[in-house]
Amino acid sequence: LQQLETLSLLRLIGDEEIVLQIMASLGDYEVDGLDATVDDITQIYQHYLTEPQAFGGNVLYQSCPRLGLPGVRLTSPRLQAYRINELVKPTHDVLDLGSNIGVISVEIARLARSVLGVEYSPSLNLVARKIAAIYRKKNINFVDSTIEAFLRSNNTRYDLVLACAITQWIDLP
Image (cartoon, rainbow, N blue to C red):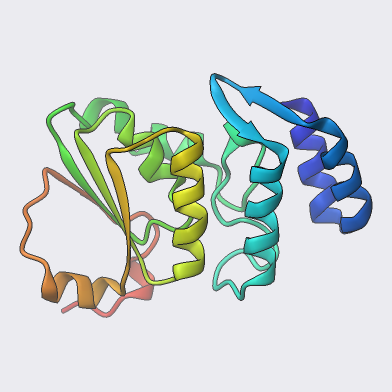
C-alpha cells in the first residue's frame, strides 16, 4: 500500500513515463484481500486523467485508500460522518445519487442487499465499475443518467437514498 501511495503522489506530480515504468516493474499485488493489478490502477488513472472531469481537475474527487487512490474528498471520514455502518442493513436496497467513481457505493455494497449508483458521467461510471470489479461486488450497478432524468423515469422504492455533496448541482423543486 505504501508503494501505491507513493506512486499515486508521483502520478499526481506529473512524470507519467517514470511512474508507469515503476508501476510496470511492480507486477500484481493484493491490498486488504483485494486482487488488483498495477495495470488496474494505471487504467483508472489514465482513464480519469484523459477524460474531462467536472470535479477535482486532474485529481480524483473521491479517494479510495484501499487501492492507494488519493482524492479531494476523503472517503473514510465521510462514511463515518454519514454513519453508514449504523444506517445500512443487509436487507436494504440503496440508491446513491451522484455516485462519482463509486467508492462510497462500493463500501455500502459490503453492507446492503443492493446498491444503484446514478452518475451522469459515463467516464466516472467506467471507473466505478472497475473499482466494483476489483472489490468483487456483484450487488452493485451504475447508471449513466442525470439525477433529474433518473427520478422522472424510475419508480423503484429504496430503503436508503444518498445524495453526498450533489444538492448544489441539481435543480429539484
